[in-house]
Image 1: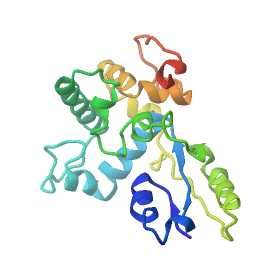
Image 2 (image 1 turned 30 degrees about the vertical axis):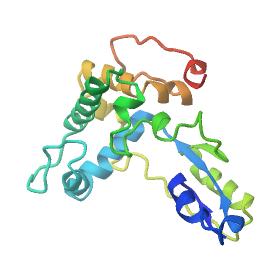
Image 3 (image 1 turned 90 degrees about the horizontal axis):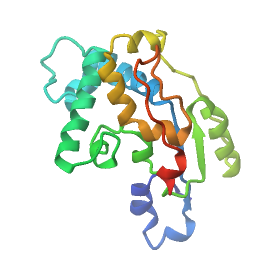
Length: 212
């Protein structure tokens, strides 16, 4: 039996004549607070191992290379994400929150609403990151597998409050992040106010407009 977790895997494995009837298609999606996700991505990709991931793949900063001895700051990391979105926004005449402007980002910080398109995909399970252990065990029981996953929560690995990271950002940066991840906030019910607050109030649109 093959377990196809992603569309590409489904196409690759389950399209073969001798596998189709044996294949169990399992689609699940785990969502997370966009602000927590940004800090986690920064720690994993721009800080861990001296930022090797960001330097090797020039992501999110195209100018970053293996020759750089210093890792990115959180403010630089956010600036590069914003610049990438703004560049594609200008090319495709879409807003900062549009899929056309954000889908070209690295998958680790692409808005989840555009990456996983939960309004268009019939997932078996949509779970919250904070409940990952319970969600994964539910899927194992549903598939009747003789297994158990162990889950260690690495949330905020440096054990530094989110307020600390976002205190290094300008109001303009916060406003633009609020726009880029607007549909994540709306669709998954997260508070759009960044850690530490933001001076400018944002107009909130109801979820039904995104999924209609």
